[in-house]
Image 1 (cartoon, rainbow, N blue to C red):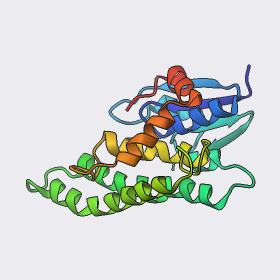
Image 2 (image 1 turned 30 degrees about the vertical axis):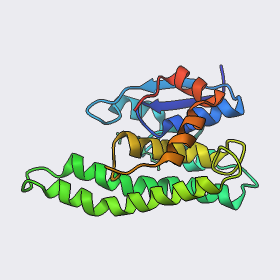
Image 3 (image 1 turned 180 degrees about the vertical axis):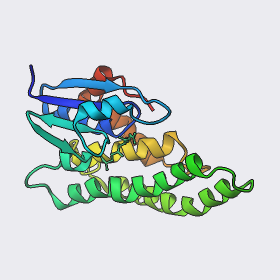
Image 4 (image 1 turned 60 degrees about the vertical axis):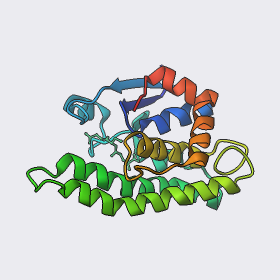
Length: 202
Ligand SMILES: N[C@@H](CCC(=O)N[C@@H](CS)C(=O)NCC(=O)O)C(=O)O
């Protein structure tokens, strides 16, 4: 029995952790759950042992580890990689999820309210995505920090993929460098294995 257990919620940041484990070649037990009404099922939250009830949750023996950025962090991390690890959550996901939550939660408001909110909040997401486009054009390889996959790709791939798949603040915009890099990420053996094993989809 492998000592590591990954609690994986469908259509979520959990793909980051599955990909990381595959890249590192670590054995792990997979506990998978579909969403119920967009949320994680209560029993799945209880089983994970994560008091916050959010995923990914990793168990290593008795230790419960959360926050996908924390899980993917490595010792002696280069500053550039660390920048993307944080930007994936604190910038890209933050700005994009504001739009998603407006779509989900603003109800009974006058017609056009959500659209107006989304239009205003789109400026942030487009700014973020333009930054990603520029940085990718400056990379010396096909990944964010050069020739090899790093935690930067593992964290940023889900954020960018999710923004594009859900059209969060990017309607009518094109991001060719991002699309090319997303393809490169999805073509890595580790990512393929993670998707094959977990059934991840958006
Ligand atoms: N900052 C956390 C975010 C964790 C998080 O919010 N996960 C979402 C899925 S992407 C979740 O578990 N949602 C289930 C729910 O709210 O029921 C991380 O990077 O791990």
